[in-house]
Image 1: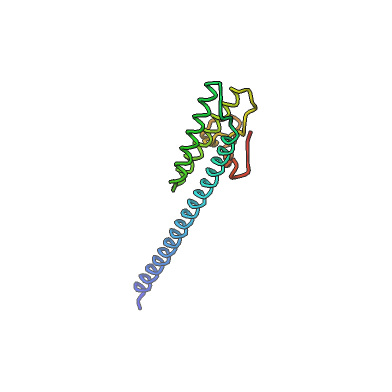
Image 2: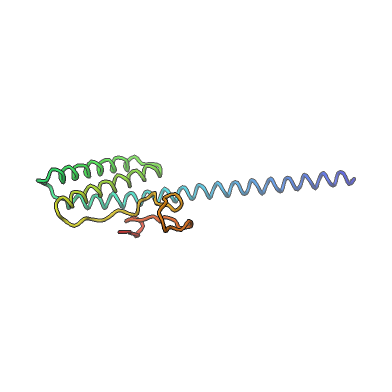
Length: 161
């Protein structure tokens, strides 16, 4: 075997090892991405279900008859948003669908609070910190660049009032 042949074998072997390592890293990265995506979807589903359950409970204790037209309109909007949330939840398959359910439920709770204010009652449960409040993008003074927004609500057990 000549020096040329030995050099070619070494280069080929090195290329094969690098190729195997790259394939292994790609497979691990793909598995990690899939698992992270699955976890995010499960968390979004639990959060959406918790917020819609809270909206269910608040609608159950809402007065049936209202004399204030603005309060009645807010209650009607809350009921429509709640119904839309249930419809989306029944057919939800993706994280963005669960996020939409959560948004509908939060909007319904907001309308219930409008109704309560019109009736002179104490506001009900408050929604979380705005979900698009992420440092660097939000432009909120006093927030650290490394600070992250954390999930909040009934599904997480973390509330901000």
